[in-house]
Length: 124
Length: 437
Image (tube, rainbow over all chains, first blue to last red; front, top):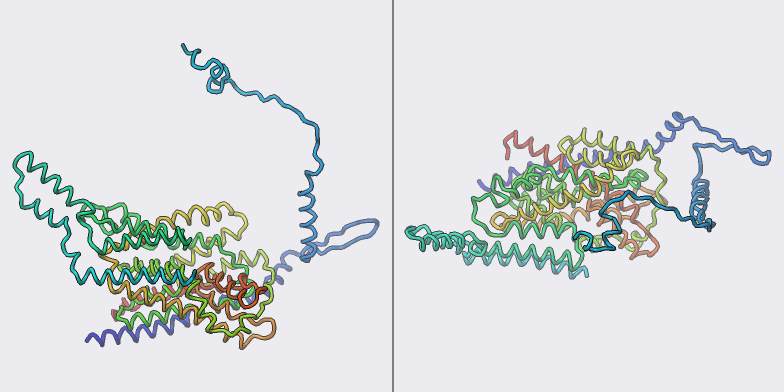
């Protein structure tokens, strides 16, 4: 009797195992296929949605046309480096003029100097 | 260092086994001092002030932990202390082991049942906190945080690595079969098998649904083996791969656009939950958390999910899972079988991940070939197993960095084990309906 119960559980377990492994593979394979197709589809669709913007730069009477949607990694790196240097070196030349500003504070007995000068005598 | 870790952990398990055997053999747990004193109180008739005071005192004594201490309780308190020691001394998953260790001590302080103190008593504070574990509330919230901290970029860049995450789930199902042959019923076997998914929250979620009475043991096994990933995996990795294979360099992943990053959680959510709706709480929260991160407009929410929120849940989960190991429920032969099966589950999962990576290599050519080591990262212990792959890769070739590549099967493993849990849940409910169990 005991053996029969175990045997019954085992066949069911085998079914679950085989179908389960199959289903896990199926799910992730589907996800894999979708994203493989995305690799090709997304750039095409996105290009259709955002029509390539062209930026025209004028310098020394020469015109440069840049395709704004297709900026290469090198260009990005160069821009980032330039911005970084600009930000990092912004403090190299600082003004040497010192100004002392008087800060006005609202009076409060908690911060009043008079109490600390006189100590507890004032209260008597 | 690693052998020392292995020695300490298995030493601890052996200690539990031996003391459990000793306790059951000696029959020490049958009558405590508390029961003796209570019996003494019951026989004495309260008359004057002196006897009343004496009886009151005796009654108080019978309520103290000292009076009710049993050997299994004492052993479990020592285990709790050992966990805390390991976490502090060896920096061994301290974020988990300290809450769990403290929980083990809390759960095993002896008390007289019936005063709404214990975790298994209705109406006690601990039982309310444990409610989140019992009903599977905490795991999805943890998954929300995991989603908000996981970067799926490497997986999107190389989607074929998703299959490695599926391959490692073979470990779950083979352990499931193994547990059935060891005499567990279907729902218990499912909860034990999922330890091979190497995913603490998923294991807790599934066992809270299918085998609540084994939850403590399964959670402790899952978390301790996750901590043992750096010990369990490397020997199997070396056994399964040749030195040449370990030196394979993979080409750097392509850049992934923001649109793809936003689409991934959406597509993943819809697709995986349509196939396996039982895993909805886990996968829904995982992909939702990732969407918060990638959308770029909900940084505040993502930040809370991956920091404060996951921390709060980890604290509650750790303490209550620890406290659920009350000796009377925890120290059983099934706990020991679960520990053994858990180790086997991890080994099989690693093995099948590596084997599948080698099979994939048969079909891949040139620089598309993958380093089979990353197959081991298909078990979803994020990011421990990816880190192990990185270390093994560096050992073979000190300039070969595999971490980014290994993260892909690693996060795919998280999805895979949640899907596997969902499939197991739906099968179990089917068999319950049929009445075949």
